[in-house]
Image 1 (cartoon, rainbow, N blue to C red):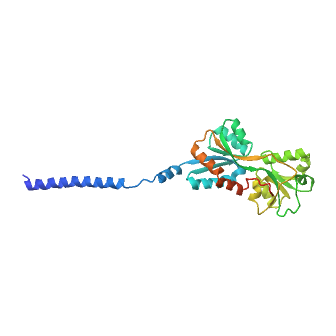
Image 2 (tube, rainbow, N blue to C red):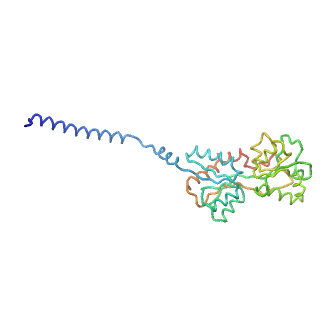
Length: 278
């Protein structure tokens, strides 16, 4: 059976038309793809969303660390993982595990970190000191450290076996020659400063001694008394860059935030800046 010349011409025309259509479609697709803009900020945000900064933080610095982490995540889109614990326990964990980017303790742990060869550098971001806290209005008229030892009062303090503030308090009374009398008035020793403050707020004790930032945390429920008869050694709050930091760029961004005007306002508002004008 023979195919007519007219039919062959028709089939050839269909094939040519089909090929032309495919090339035209491919061209349109290429044009469409080339005209889709690439947003470099969106690409960077997507990459940052997968990043996580790991920060070891002493329990006493928790309020400031949480506020800074929230600000940092909002500003840079990089996640922050906070590992809380006692500063001494965290130092041991850092030494053994070699994990984490930053460490936020109070003195003397930056120096101890450096002695172990784990400190790149640090920034001082705040200060704390032991103070007396009393019920609103100071009903017992407590003014000095001596009052806590020589008057008939019940007192709560951080446990000196675990807390630096507790150690400083004991050392101060020992230097005053009043440690035994003071210990007779100690009704409670707690590992955490919040537990000490809550014992006072709930009325279980007449007075307490805690780090200065606690007075800010409970400012509507207690009053602060800075004792004039004792001068405690300065205790700095330090933000430390670890030598084994995985994401050094993010860690340095966090340090810049902590030392910026915004970061310092956070530390001040939460009670980590000493004001002796009162």
